[in-house]
Length: 94
Image (tube, rainbow, N blue to C red; front, side, top):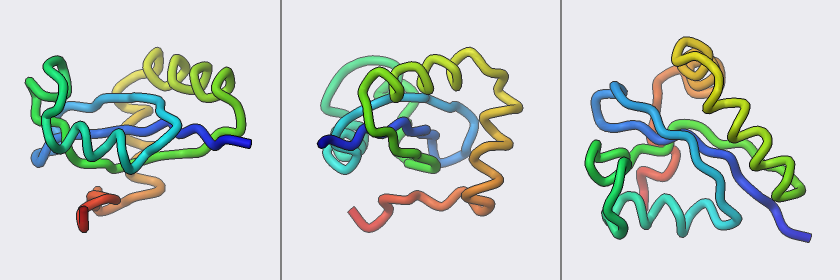
């Protein structure tokens, strides 16, 4: 059985948020940190993992990702602040 992750990235100033989904959180965040793909996360230097949650199915993970993306910025900020109040990079050692 696989685990799927819904995650939130930000930049060093915590000004831009990105919500994504993956089946390998460490690999995917490392791709973001390396700027491996052109696009939104590379353009805004979104390399700081500040939140993630797990899901047992890809369908549930995608549904949660859509729910978070549809929510307000304030809701995303509150979610991160509740579980990661100092906005620490959860993969800072990598």
